[in-house]
Each structure stands twice: as structure tokens, then as C-alpha cells.
Image (cartoon, rainbow, N blue to C red):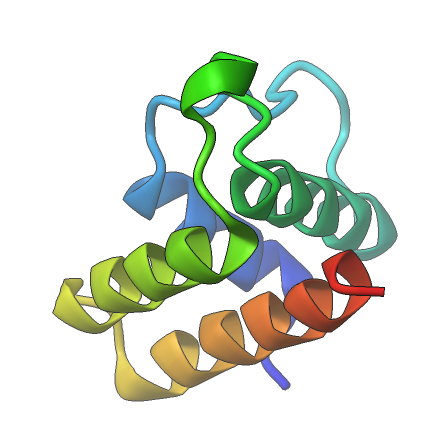
Length: 93
């Protein structure tokens, strides 16, 4: 899998309106934690009012479509989708 710092920057480029802590020093471990947290929030639709939240499966579908439509390298796209799959499995427990 690609380095988490690279994936973090790729994720940030696709979801540029997300507040991802830019102030602190970013290490591989910190980038891994931040990207997992951001994907979980996205899949749980935590940034939306509770009455209009969508199911994680719907948010996952939109995320994969956004990733596939992006200009990122195919290897990066696959790594981001794999991360989304991992987090989706966690969310569904």
C-alpha cells in the first residue's frame, strides 16, 4: 500500500473542504490516524444534520465515484478505495 502521507495528501485534494489538522507535524502514523478518522466521519455522514444523514453504503458509493473520477494515479485510487473498504467494514460492525 502507498505511504499514508501520500494518501493523506491525495484524500485532502479530493475532499478539500474537510478540516484536516494542517497545523501539527504530520508523521506516517499521524497521517494514518487522520485519514481513518476522516473516512469514518465521511461514511457515518457526521458532517450532516442527523435528520438528513445518508446510510454508510450510500456515502461509500459516492466516495468511490469521486475517487474514480479524480485525476489521481490508478495506484493511489486503489489504495484510497482499499482504505474506504477497511473503514466501511469497521463502521458496519
